[in-house]
Amino acid sequence: MGRQVLTLHCANVDCEHDAAAIERSLRKETGVVAVEVYPRSARVSITYDPEMISSVRLQGRLRALGFPPYEGAALPTGPPKPWRNPKVLTSAAAGALLLAGWLAGRAGASGTLSLVLYLAGMLSGGYYFGREAVEGLLFERRIGIELLMALAAIVAAAMGQAAEGALLVFLYSISEALEGYTEESTRAAIKALMRLAPQTALVRRAGAELELPAQQLRVGDIFIVRPGQAVATDGVVVAGSSAVNQAPITGESALVEKAPGDVVFAGSINGAGALEVRATKTFADNSIARVIEMIEDAQERKSRRQRVIERFGAAYSPAVLGVGLLTALVPPLLSALLAMATYTFWLQLLAPASIMALVRPDLDHPRQGPHRGGGPVRTRHLRASDNGCHAGYRGAGRGARQGRHLRRGTGQGPRGGTGQDRHADRG
Image 1: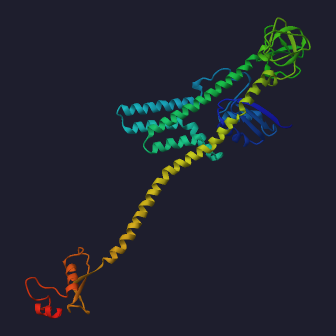
Image 2: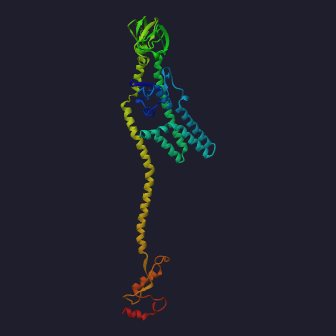
């Protein structure tokens, strides 16, 4: 037996991340040859080897991932209920916890209670997009807007601004939930086209007339279209004649007469006469199914502007993250380097000056040598207890200029000399 293709429409497929998660999981299954996921139409096409894996197992795998497939009449024909969307529920819970934390703070409750409520709101609202951020980073090596939002909320909480972090998580989660809800509503409007064709058909097999689901019609089956009924699938009239309204398919406003040998389309409404039609297409391949498929394919095709925006977004998120890291790390590093440079500069400036100040002239220690006045010149090594230039230093300067010191009020020099000696020396 050769390869087969299984095409399913699944619930909860809202974005490219969901499509990537389905592809990663199904490709790990033995027997799966190729997987194509169209997130805008929630359509999954799986090429597989039936000898190695069954379609039932593939559908079970999709259910386990959280993307249960629709089957035939179970396709959504109206907007989904908000309370059945898990993203809407988690976002609503995040908003309620945020409001409770704010009210607790206004009521004068302890800061710990408000903090716990805010953190719980962040965990609730950030579950889905936080998981997307981690999986995108680990499996796809991609930094997206989800990672930026998650990091911003975490940093806000770490800086003591848990309320701002919870508010950010709530706003982003509600935007994600509304986006998914809108996508589901659009798909439901498209799938409503399936209501144009009946879900059952009166089939003649082995001489008996059987009421069977339209999905079980095979090419070549003869089915009966009663007056006022819609045609189940495309076919050729083999018996009977009637006026048929083809406006739902072709847009023609006038009724079209059908006789044996004429072609009828799925979804056309039969008039007053009964028709026997031989099926030429299966239910999944009739005119309505092809119209839906063309609409879904058109949705999947991206415009040039959208492709440009996606390329910009792929570079924007890493750039913003890099700028944020530089803003957080560079100023403290520069401040530390500047402080170190300033300290080193003053150390280099003061060290030589301190060494030169260790030795200064004074009168405490005599040093013999030729001198104009014959008197000794004394120097003193500066001790730690000395305070700069004091009287001994100034006295040594005068001794160097005059040769000796005169004691105040006497005629003797410092070593017993007289005023006459001074005059003789001058001579």
